[in-house]
Image 1: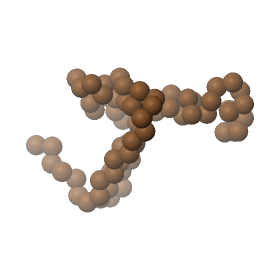
Image 2: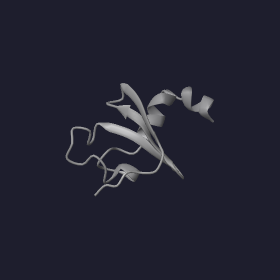
Image 3: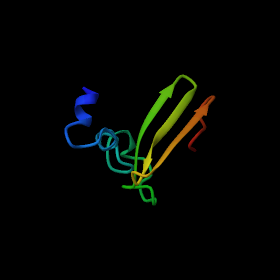
Length: 77
């Protein structure tokens, strides 16, 4: 299927980026980064395991990033 998508006129990269949630607007990023310069400019995916979490994606479709945190979560209070 992925090979077919590449040949239907739209690059696979664009399809995958479009499928990611938008910071401050949709999916798992709906309540994250609101009121910051990242809102509406970052598309990313969150991920969690027992004592690890990650946020990976793109800024303005040009800059790829990945932040991975190991260990117990930090308090937000």
